[in-house]
Image 1: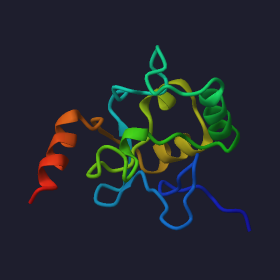
Image 2 (image 1 turned 90 degrees about the vertical axis):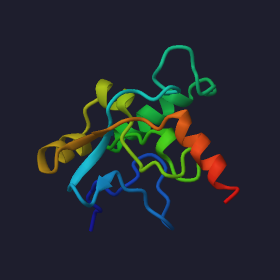
Image 3 (image 1 turned 180 degrees about the horizontal axis):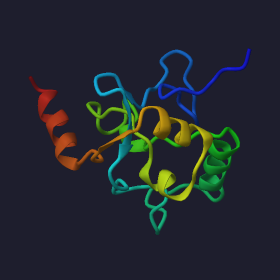
Length: 129
């Protein structure tokens, strides 16, 4: 039986131990960034310092699998531990995939702002408590 994508699936780097979910369980919608994050992989200038061909490989994989890319700033254990996984706005603005179309049609999206440096600062201060 073939697995059907749901808002809880991580389309690019699945982690079978702890699956990522872009689904908001309270609203019943999928989280989509309201705008590109400050270091979006789709922003001009390679702000994430990706190696040659890495962005193309990520996009190719997501499109071939008919899925999406989760914003790196919303990944757990990255810079903003309180951030919830959300669909990369740069990807969603450029590509349409079956997963995005299904999510939009079935649940809709809730737009969330990208994490900001203040949230990183809050995490650092909270570590001393």
